[in-house]
Amino acid sequence: MDYLSRIGSDAWALFKGFRITLKYLFSPAVTVQYPLQRLAVSPRFRGALAFHEDTCIACEMCVRACPSRCISLEAKRNDKGKKDLLWYRIDLSRCNFCRLCEEACPTKPKSVHHSPHYELLFGKREDFVSEWRRGKSSGVTDSCVWRRYLPVPDRPRAKEEKPG
Amino acid sequence: MKTTDSNNVQNERVTPPFRSPVTPDEGELSENELWLNMGPQHPSTHGVLRVVLKMEGEIIREARPDVGYLHRGVEKLAENRTYSQFNILTDRNDYLASMLNNWAYCLSVEKLLGVRAPERAEYLRVIVGELNRIASHLVFIGTFGIDIGAFTPFLYAFGREREMVLDLFERLCGARLTYNYIRIGGVMADLPDGWGDQARSFIPHMRRCLKEYDDLLTYNPIFLDRTKGIGAIPKDKAVSYGLSGPNLRASGVSTDLRKDEPYGIYDRFQFKPAVGTTGDTWDRYFVRRLEIEESLNIVEQALNSLPEGDILAKGQRPTVRPPVGESYAQIEGARGWLGIYLVSDGTERPYRLHVRGPSFINLTILQEMLKGWKIADVVAILGSLDVVLGEVDR
Image (cartoon, rainbow over all chains, first blue to last red):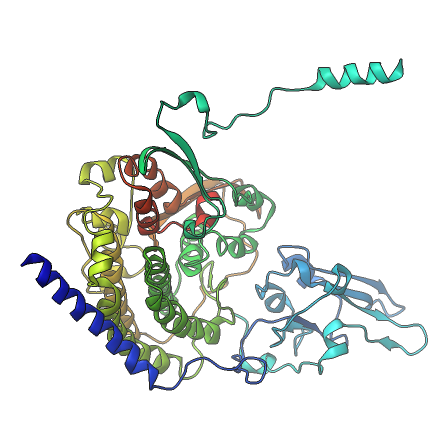
């Protein structure tokens, strides 16, 4: 008798489980076909770091804020006593995506900030490092990795929110 | 001649091989016993844990957990980072409940500084902390089902409901796993527009889904056979091993730091800590399932009474120099009492930091619990303890 009631209760549990499966069989899928469809990331998303040389004042606040020495730069004082940025280097292999550099940056709009780019693929270790360097002839040379492949990220968050 | 010399030097340099205390030794075995290594690459150890088992047939006579494969020296790293820089490393201790790690650390630093987070920040901390506890328990429900052999609940708990919580966190702080959201003296950012409504709509959805999990997993006869009465921890043993969190409550001890020593603003919320009866594997599962409901209640209350105001204490700078002294702050983490001990020497970096990781202490009972059970129960018992190896090894 125990044996039979066990069969009955197991069959009922099986039915309850399959009822849920059946319910979701006919409801819309929650997944997307990734390379063809993409989910939008939120405005605050912390993706690859982006750097803008036009506003940077070479104050080294980001270098000091970074917990893993991901950012380095070199600057030289010019005739007016102001700092001229010589080069600015971001090593994404060390980046923790923690937003501390962005919060430390005092310029408006931010010179260094997280971009929404999350598809980061690098073939070599050297590719992780992206560097901006003041060029000799043309003034500014752009050599950031993500700028080579992707459009330059704009700076939406400088207006959107105050650093917490 | 030269070659013989160098050979001699080499021979002299040979040191006796290091023997770990867990290393299995043939000499310890009786006639019908054998050593079996489970892990470190076993899929159900949820990370890299090695358990050396002395088997007699399929019955376990002795178990020796071997931890340390994920050791990163977090406590030492803290001595070379400023107080706000170390916050991001606490994310990586218990990576399934990063918010709660941030919270424990920030409470400890705030104790040293004598700072209190503003009212709104305290509410935001409760909301994100409880949502993160839900996300962490959802991972447990999903992976525990897989350990036992039920694959479907994983797709719902881990792949759908947890994603909703992570989406909320992504909108709030921009990260899905390592948040760095709770900061010394407050939180990182205020809620974006419409976040509260999105969080409110998650609560009834989650309550509906819990009923589905009950049908799929909790009261499934196969699941009950695998978990009921397996690996029971008596009350006194659970206390003497220093278990905490859901593992202790499953044994029938009603302790919850949110009730017993309310930190933050937990004394303002109505909730009842979930308590089990026998402390078996099913109870440890069920206590976590009940805790999701309690957390949902707390989130709902906090969202309804969220005040306006600052999110960061006034004048709080990223670089802090706490006065010389020491502090210990503990919170009810997703896995138990999560405590951070800090010693300050007055500089901008901690002199010493220690983490009381609940997973590590909960894991110590494994060697006692596994004795006498069958090899198939190891996975169920280990899974029910819900350890995160990132926190065990630190």
